[in-house]
Image 1 (tube, helix red, strand yellow):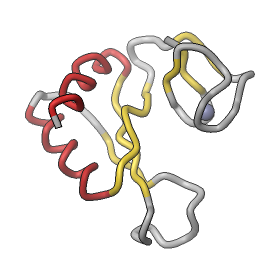
Image 2 (spheres, rainbow, N blue to C red):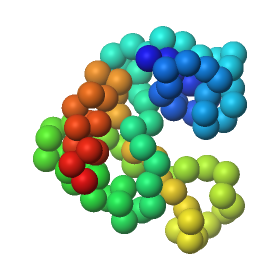
Image 3 (tube, rainbow, N blue to C red):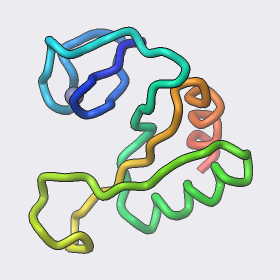
Image 4 (cartoon, rainbow, N blue to C red):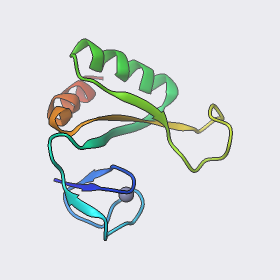
Length: 96
Ligand SMILES: [Zn+2]
């Protein structure tokens, strides 16, 4: 699995589907922070609860690039986890 060093998106092969970067990609290692998913706030909060129940550490951040107001309609939030938790987190994601 490759990880984009610019936006932390995971992919099987480049270029990055999120930002188009093809130069700053590297093989993901277990301590790398990666983006699990991007969701509207309400769903991001729900997933955060579920991940915490599974004791998977995660951080929610507002995605950039959609203007100055954090809670404007259409704003997405990204859930960041460690790559070592990725497979477990994907299982949680699959249950929602
Ligand atoms: Zn990227």
